[in-house]
Image (cartoon, rainbow, N blue to C red; front, side, top):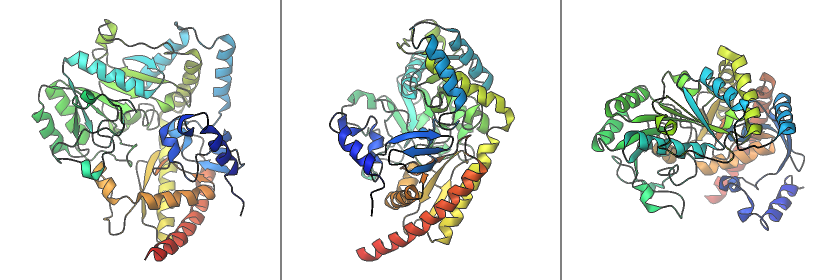
Length: 451
């Protein structure tokens, strides 16, 4: 039987001779059966170097909200490239992009640009400490805020290192981290308002800010329970802490105003990435004027040679104009298609006896694969996810989906883009049903062989 990924295997072997570990982001090495190499994409479809075509629900880890290679964005970048790619100075485009963000996001009174959301996270945390004069940052167990020393504290601790449920461990998944960084964080459990109040009280007067994903998309797809957002707002107001919304994934995807508009709140600082650049390296820190004051007066250093790069600004302006044009119709279309896809996947899983339960708002969702004997119902926090999700079984189903031409993210996350159509959803469900049948048969055989 021919190897459908032969060219990708050949290129990956070659890459390992010149690129450390063969990839330029560690998570890409996780892809099975091999890190894939792609030749081109258009709209909701992506083609690899072996000629395999996929309906793409990985969609650039969420950055390609507008589909692959939209003509208008390509034209905007080409037009700017002919004028200049970089000046390390100001251009009118940065004002135009900033004004569009102000229109879309009510809490975006002022903005600053960076090249990645990881950089923006570091800027926001520095800003919060300068604003309050306090050392600590509170974040939630299992939440991802970029790959830097500060962003990954408490991200994915193994069960044996969870620590006291009242004050979860502050370990870091990477070697080489400055040890003192861990002491500058307090980790709380998501979706437990009473626990949040207790941990804030314990560290009263020391916490500069709370940073959180309004919908924790990087670990399952954990929407806030009733009272969670309200409690966050209350404790920040009562304690004088800044509220930092990491909308790297939810920004623009959940509507023009992001998850803040979708869930009905405003943050002091907002981290934006992925969709605001549509696939180019572009990110922004948006915030209320008072929260940005230490940047305005120069007490906080925020710099970067490539900040406000004209090529990225041209792309971002085009992206933001698409969302502005959609107006109140967005994210309704994505919610509708995403919910249809979730419901269809759930129905297919039930037909084939696969214990898979999609959860999330629709524009982003996660396929939870239940372990034998695990309780049903929504997953609410990181520990619940680890205890109930069968990662090995999901990985096998993902391979079956890939063979049927449906591409989702390795850890179980799916994104729907503005390029996906009703026909794409219908076709994806047809292919997914074949993948479910293949998985159910092969998994049953493998399980029987083990026993």
